[in-house]
Each structure stands twice: as structure tokens, then as C-alpha cells.
Length: 95
Image (cartoon, rainbow, N blue to C red; front, side, top):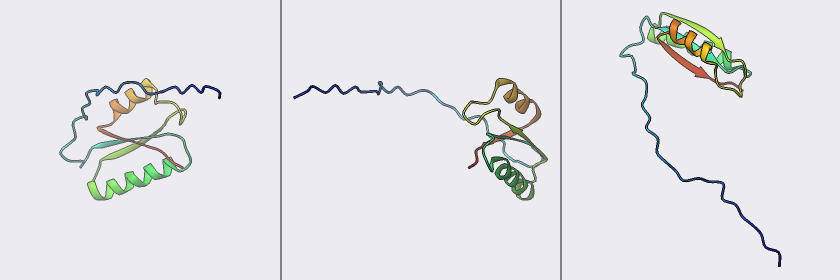
């Protein structure tokens, strides 16, 4: 009988500290940033979300950005621009 080697691809688990960003107490008048990943329907989904938030939460304005590639994280320059121009942000995907 042939020997079969089985490799365990897991590593030991270690808990990492995590903290959420501070949440605003209200959304009224805030500038909303939308970052979509470039997949089909992601821009449409985020625009509908912004329209719903405008109607129900009275956000001030919204602006949409598109990542360069769905498979890559957003570039630091894009995130810096969103942070400079917006009070809150939503990142979304499509398909």
C-alpha cells in the first residue's frame, strides 16, 4: 500500500484587536461617499442606496467613486480622497 501525505494548511488562530470607527449620531446633512468595485450593477445598487438615504435620512450630498479593479483593494489615494470629501462612506459590490 502506498503512503499518502496529508498537509494541514491551517495555522494557529490568534485573536486580533478590532475597533469600529465612531458612528455619527445622525445622518442628516452628512456627505455620503460611495465606493463601488466595478462589478456589474454595483454602481446602480449604491446609487439607489444613496437615493433611499436621501429620502429617509436627509443626507446632504453623495458622490460615487469606482475602484480600479474588483479583485484589488482600493488605492490609498482613492481612500484619502473619499475621507477628505465625505463624512461617511459605503463600499459596495455588484453581480
